[in-house]
Amino acid sequence: MCLPVKFISLPLNHLVLFMSKLKQLWNFIRRYKYIVTVFVFLLIIGVLDEDNSLIQRFRHWREIHELNTEIEKYRRQYEEDSKTLKEITNNPKALEKVAREKYLMKEENEDVFVFEEDLKKNEDE
Image 1: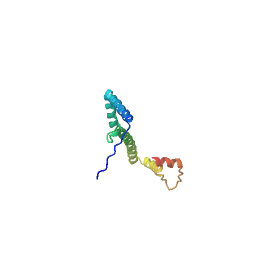
Image 2: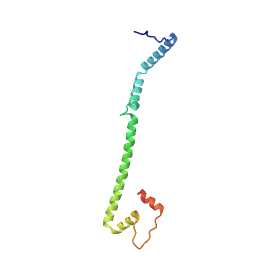
Image 3: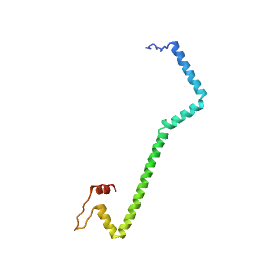
Image 4: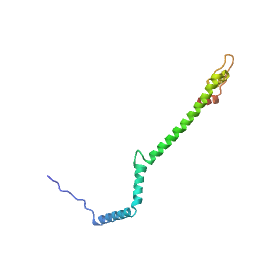
């Protein structure tokens, strides 16, 4: 059994108003078609495209910059540690100095006083 279809009836003045707005929109698009096209393109590329959006590209650029900074930091630390290792292997006094400063070692007949500031400094290194 078929039920009757009810049509939504809009008053004529609403329909005319809607059609006039639609015609204005169409005229605007026709007049500024290149600007609208560029705007839509930028919207798609800049925001809507998830993989290659400008926002995503900026995030990747920032991450690469942070990683390069970290690489440089570890490169400097490697150079300093290599220099210290070379010095330790060649000079027993340097070995004793590093053992006392970094690992808080002492000889049997001496007392060592460690300040909290020095502990914090050693932890940071």
